[in-house]
Image (cartoon, rainbow, N blue to C red):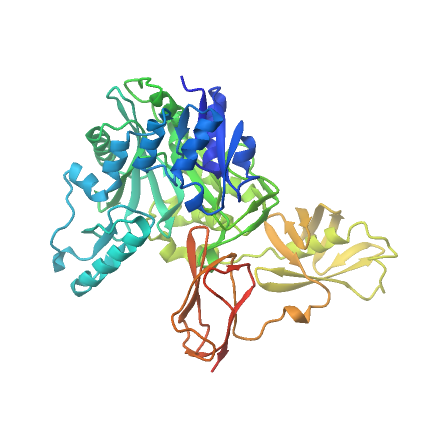
Length: 613
C-alpha cells in the first residue's frame, strides 16, 4: 500500500492530487521553487521540499532533485501530475530505479507514445510520405512535441521544403529532436478526445468522449463531456481506437487519446500518457476519481470489468490571468480574492493574498459544472462564472461567459477556429455605467460633514477613475435630501455596499478596495489622483511593456536613429510560457531603445520610443 506521495508538480495540479491523497489517508509531499515558497500547494502538503531557483529548467524539470526530495521526505511513491516531467520516460525510470512507486504508465509506453510518428505507425496510420497538390493543405508537425511549436500549415506545394526546414529547426530548439512528419490539415475541425484508465491485468476502460474545441494558441479554454453531437457510431469508433492504442503499448493508469473530427471522420492526433487538465468533466459524468484510480492501479489493484455508467453532462472553463483583448497577454500581481459560488467545482492552486508571478502558466483555476443535460450544464457554468468573485489581475472570465452563451457554442456548432472568428465579439467591452458611481460613494462613506462632505451646495463632488484604459469622471452632490447623481437615486451607501435605483430598478453593488484598486462586483477600477502627475506622462510613440516578463529578443540591427515601419516587430517579451511581440506603431525613427535581452520588465516600463515620420 502507498502511504506517502510526492507530487512532482505545482499549483492547481498538486493541490488537486493532494485532495484525493488526503481522502485516501495518504501523506502528501510537495516540492517548490523559490518563487513558490509560499504557494498554496507548498502550504497544504504535509511536508514540502525546496528546489533552489525559480525557472522551471532549474526546479520542476530537474528529475534528479525531485527523486532526492522524495527519498529525503520519506515518500514511497511519486505522482508526476500533468505538464513538466509527466511524460518523461527517463524521469519515470529514475523514480523506479530509486525504489519508489511510479503513479503513471510504464516508461516504455511513455517512450513509444512520445513520438507521434511511432504512435501513428502502431495504429496503422502512417503519415504522408509524398505530398501532391491533391493533399493540400497539409500540416507539418514536430514528432516529439506539442503546444504549437514545430508546427506549420502548408497551402502551396512550393512552400513545403521551406516550412519543413523551419519546423525542424524549431522542433530541435524546443524539444531537442528535429524529427517532423506531415499529415492532412483539418480546417476548423473539432478537437475530440477519449479518456482511458487501464490496469496491469488487461482491463482498459474507455470513459467516453470530451470536446476541447475552444482553444487559444493551441491550448484549451473550455472542455466538456461527452462531446456533443457526435454520431453514436463515431463515438464508439473513437473509444475502440483509444482502447486499441492502450493495449498496443500495455498501458497502465490514466491517459488520453486525441482526435480531430471533421465531416464525420476522425483523424488521430496523439496519445497523452498522463492525466489531462480537463479530467474533472469525465470524473463528473462517470462519478469516478481518476487520481484515486491511478493510485490503485499503481498499487496493483484490478479495475472492475466494466466502467460505471455515464450520467448527465459536464463543462469546464479554465480561468486564466490574461487579457484576451491584448493578444492574450499574461497578467501578474496580487490575487486578493477568488471565490466561486456553491454548486460548482473549483480546482485552484491559489487563494487570497497569493502573488501571481511570471515564471509559470497563467491558469488560476478550473471551474466545473455538472447537470442532467448539456444546456443546463452550460447555463449553470456561465451563471457561476458571473457570480465568481475575482479581485486581482485581469482575467479571461468575461470571455468565458460570452463564449458559453455564444449561439455557436450553445448549439454545439463550435470548432477549433472559434476564437479566430469571434475573438473581437467575445472581448468587446460592456462597461457598467453605475460602477464608478458606486465606487465613489463607497469611498466617500464615513467622512465627516466637515471633512470630505463639506462643500458649497452647488458644487459637486468629483472622483476620477481609470477603467480598461479609459478615464472616467464621477460627479454627485450631497444635499439635505440625500445624495444626488444624474438620473440615479442613492438608496444606501457604506464602505462595502451601495444600493442605487435607476428608472425604478434597484441594484446592489459590493465594493472592495486594495490601495488604489477598487472592485465593484466584476468591474475593476483604478482610483486616480485629483491632479495628474506630469512625471508619469510619456511622449507620443512610446512603447511600454504590456505585461511583466523578460526581454528575450531585440530585432537585429535595432539601434537609436534607425528608420522603422508600422507593424515592424521590434522587441519580444516572454512571460508565463508565452511570447508577446512589440511592434512599431507607425512609420518613423527609433529615438530611444531601453530594452535589452535578459532584462526583467514590469508593466508600463518604457522599452523604446518611435518618433512618427
